[in-house]
Amino acid sequence: MIEDAIWEKINSSLYDFLLVYDFDKLLFNFNVISKIFDEGYEVFIYKDIEEYRIFYETKIRDMNKKVVLIVTEKVYLPWDVKQDYHEVWIRLKDLFFNLDVDVIKQIDVEYFDVIYQKMKSLNRVLNYEETCNFILRYIYNIDISVINNLQDLIKQLLRLYFKGTELPQVLSDFIKNKLVFLPPEVSCILNSKGEFFKFFQTEFDKFVGKDKYDKMDGEDYIDFLDPEIRVYLDDLIMDNIIKLTKPTELNNSLPIKQLGLVFNLKSQEEEYKHLRNRLKKLLCEIKNYKDWFEVAEIFGRIINLCCILNDDEYETLSHEINVKFKDWLFKNYGKLPYLSYSNGPIMVHHIQPYIINLLKKENKNKVAFILVDGMSEFNWTIIKEYLENMDLRIEKKSCFAWIPTITSISRQSIFSAEPPLRFKTTMFSTNYDEKHFKRFFMNSGYKEKEIAYIRSIKTFEEENLRRALEEDCKVLCVVVDVIDEFVHGQIFNYKGLQNQINFYMSEGYLQKFLEELFKENYEVFIASDHGNVLTVGQGNVKEGVYIDTLSNRVKIYPKDIPIESPTGIKIIKWGGIGLPDEYNYVVSDDNLSFHDKGKTILTHGGISIEEIIVPFVRIMPSL
Image (cartoon, rainbow, N blue to C red):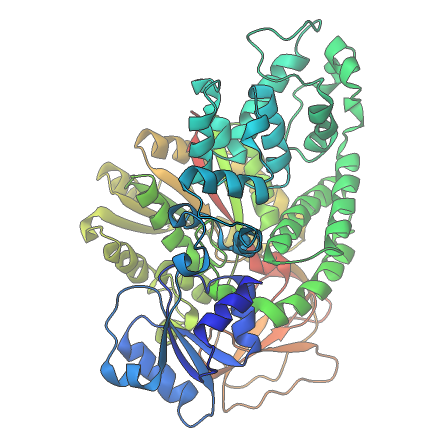
C-alpha cells in the first residue's frame, strides 16, 4: 500500500518529531493521513511561526505527544524549530520513479495507491505518452487502442461518467490529440460529465423525435440501439440525468419501440422508489467520504419528492442515514481538513483555494462567488430544476461544513479559507466575513479596489450590488440570506420550505442575475455554508453562561462550565476537531433540538448529514 511506502520513507527511524517537506502534497490522502493518526501523531500544517508557537505551547510542550509538522511550500522556518525535528523530503519522483511525474501531478491523490501497485510490474521508465496510456488503462479502464470511431469513445465515456468519474485535463487533452477522427464540435464530451450528458441529451432528443428510424446518417453521432448504450438508458432516465420532454407522446414512436422503453412508468412515485432503493444499497456499501456525498445528494432528491408526494418517510430514512453517518464522523471527520482539494473542495474552507487554482489553470481572472446561507442538498435540488430551464452547464460537487454547523463558524471558515481554530477570536461573529474574504483574494494577487463583498442579498436588485456590477469588479462575493430566513421563519416543515423556495425561484431573481454575470464574463460559483434539518424539540440543557449561537442544535460553553444534561435530554459532546479548545461543544442528538418539547422546527448547528454536507456548484453558459 502506498501509505506504507510513504510512512517508511518519512519515519523509517521512528522519530517522535517529524518535519516533512511535502510540496507535492502526498500526505494529503485519506489512507496516508489515517496511517499518521493511527501511529499516534498530531498533525500540523506549518504556515507561519507565530501560529506554530501557539500550537506548540498549548498542544505539545510537556504533553508527551508526537508531531508530524508538514510544510507544503517555501516558507521561513527558524533554526530552533528545525533543531527539534527530524527533517524528511517526500516527493512524487521518489515514489513514482517509473512514470512521468508531470502527468502524475494532475491525477487525484485517491488513485495513487492503485497506480503505485500497478507500477510495480513495470521494468522500465515510461515516457509521457506511455504514462498517459498506463493511467487511462489501469485507473479509468480506457484503452485508446480499441477506440476506432466516435461510437467507441461514447461507450467508454458513458461507462465512466455514469459512475460519476471524470478525467483530469491532462488525460482528456491527451485523448483529443490521439483521436484524429474526433469532430471539433464534439470534443467537449471529454471535458466533463456535464458536457458529455448535455451532448448525449441533444442526440437523444434528435433520436426519439424521429417519425421513423432509419440507418444512422451523418447528422447523428450516437447509435442508441447499440446494446452497450441501451443498457444505461433506463437508469439515466430514472436518475434524471437524461430527461424526457413529452414522454406520453413518445410511446408510439418507432425509435422508442425499438429501444423497448416504456416512459409512462417514469412517474414521481417510480422515481422515488428507485432513489430509495439506491440509497439503501449505497448505505450498505459506504467506503469513503465520496460515498457520503452521493448519499446526501440522493437523500436531498428524496426529501423533495416526499414533499411533492406528501410522504413523510424521509423521517425514517433520515434516522437510518444519520445513525451510520454519526459513527463515520466520529472516526473520520478529523482527517478531512488534511485531504487534497485539487479536484474539488472536501471541506468548505477548501472552496476559495480551489476556485483560485481553477482560475489560474484556466487563465481567467473574473469570478462571482454566490454564497447561499443555509442551503442544503434538498434546497439545491429545487433550485437546480429552475436553472436547468436555462441554457447552462451545471457542474455540481459537495463538501463538508464545519461542525458546529452555524453561520459564524462555517461561513467564516469559507471566507478565511482556514479551520475555525485559526480565527478563534472572531468565531462567534459574522462581522469579519468581508475582511477575511478580501484578505484571501488580495493574498491571491488581486487589488482591494478590484474586490467587492455584498451581503444581505434577496432580489439581486439591491443598490450596492448594482453599483459593484457597474464598477466591473474582478472578484464579486454575494451573500444571499433568503433560504436561511425561510428556514428560521418556517413554522411548518420541509413542505413549507419547498413552497417558499419554489415561489422565490419562480420570480426569476437568481436566473436574471446569472445572465448578467455571464454577459460580464464572470466565472460563477454557488456554495453554501451549512444545511438545515427538520427537528423535534426535546427541551433544553442547563442554562447558564454560554456562547449565544442563535442555534437550537448546539450549545457552546466556556471550558470551565460543567456540562449537565437533564434526564431525557439526548446530547453529544463534540470533540472540537479543528476548533479552539477553550470551549465545550454540546450538540442535540438525533433529529432533536434544544427547543420546546414536541415542537417541530427547521434549524441547524448539529451533525446530521442534512446540515453537514452541502452543495458546491459551478455554473457556466452553454458553449
